[in-house]
Image (cartoon, rainbow, N blue to C red; front, side, top):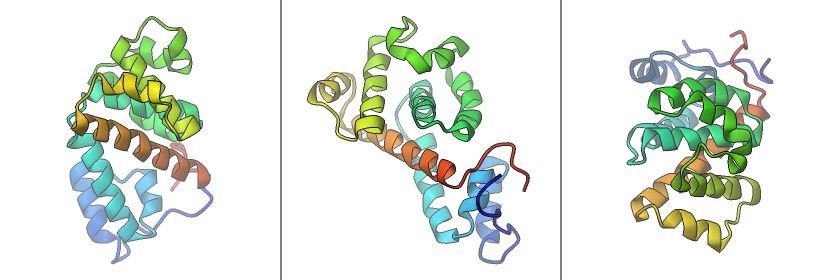
Length: 174
């Protein structure tokens, strides 16, 4: 159970954003139910994550692979629960999802994917990215995509840290 009660979605300050989230995403997930305690933070979060997920030039399977690896590294089951089905829809295989724990021992990932996973690991575990890891991933992407990749990794580290700090899980009752 979450460490705080979920926000009142009918509160006048939250209602316009609730309507927008429902229109854009179909429902208000637990993440946004918590964020809506601060509608301004929720609004900024929604804009940022919408840009990452829907306006980036990164291939969807690659984006979701990064999100799922961040979830694995940070022990964030809610993030994995939400993005596992999306990753499959975007083209990842179940075998690849299952291999993310030990991707460096798997033959299921291309050289580009391996470079991205190493970059994800470095950003998430060490914060500072070694030059050889940055150079390897940079060889596959232009400047725009490097910014998008880096922002995606950073954003989903933010998401998982928020979720885990407040103990938000998919099976929480509202």
